[in-house]
Image 1 (cartoon, rainbow, N blue to C red):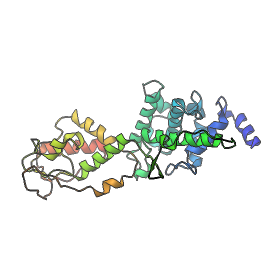
Image 2: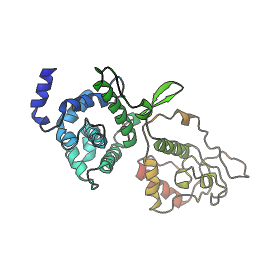
Image 3: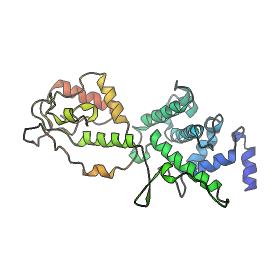
Image 4: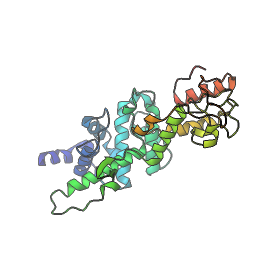
Length: 310
């Protein structure tokens, strides 16, 4: 162990890194251990390589071993470095993660690091083959960081006669009926995912154009943007995003996918709503207007999804 510490202290790529021993320990924890989950497709080697190649960017002016906002920002940089290296062609012309970060004009606070995570997720979207390979969003990463900090404090006190630790239900876990479970994402993001799934799979079956609050999509406000969506089976629909300004806002809501498994969404009934007072109909989508076709063409470009044949 002493030889390992000596090698760390004399490594040229790690010069100037404060408390390098604790940084390496935190790197080991947050990249996956017995207490904390792993990143799909990114093992210990990927994290070690990412840290060594970008040590000054990750921990030069920050500190990966501190359990505060500074440490969280350093952790965001570490994870961003790993996924940048894995999907490097997607980030051209940026030659390094530092170059990509410098394009963000939000200072050096938490906001700029949250933006960095979002930018990487956006660039990765067309390259991944499964959502398992997606970089988690910033909220999910912060919960992962909270769990990593708890483990680091636990290990630090391993030789003490008594331990003083935060309750685990305040550190990225939840206790329900004496069972401890991981909190994978924030309630806000989970709600957005459920809302988006409903928008894709469950819609109205109106026959009057969806112009009044008799349309369940328009009335409930649960659908994305209040508009009818791919799950609707309405006829001659007028409840669509009609201007270019509305479409980016709609995409912003759809962009906030998290990386959680939502078992509760698997039992969502599809196409169960219709105009109040009207009989429910089961028909194929019937939107012949050129305006609606243009709407879906634009939506497909924004999201990268296949545009349905209408």
